[in-house]
Image (cartoon, rainbow, N blue to C red; front, side):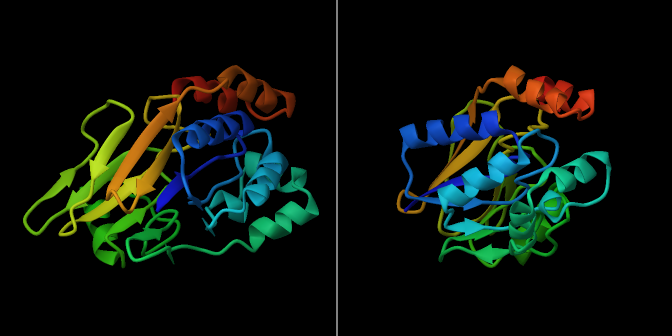
Length: 235
């Protein structure tokens, strides 16, 4: 089975459509969405509608999907249609078991809103996970960790993309496919992943998208300039 893994779209329609087109050219069977469909970007309703049309096989909420506090979140709440607002509110919280290999969460398996910032966070998440591969989002940083019987390590030390992570049956893995619409690892390209459970492989990708169009949509909606500027920086 080949899963397309998407996280942190953040109402960036241009990035989302580019990722879907690239993923179709690569090939996949099912889709997993790890939360934060909305927030920051200028097209929350369009994203909700696109995701619903996509009919993902597993979909969990992120913190922005709960529509928290703040200027931008208030705009998102008021901009969303009643139908989309209710749909987002009904999204399930993670973690969620997908199959015998994969578990998904937004933040961590022990708390949907917690961040994996360092090695200790990563170790705690892997020990809490109920499946060999835990896929997470929330940090907007494309990264993978592995844990064997005698070693904990970083599976994404190489900056080359696409990057393949081979899965050993004896190990555990914690992988963030990166953010589609709000990367924060210094690379402005949209991030996503493909998990092949038959080949026992996770591949993470980056793809260029029309950032200027996404920036224009943010400014057209009267959102803070910084939300547009940061897209070009990947920060």
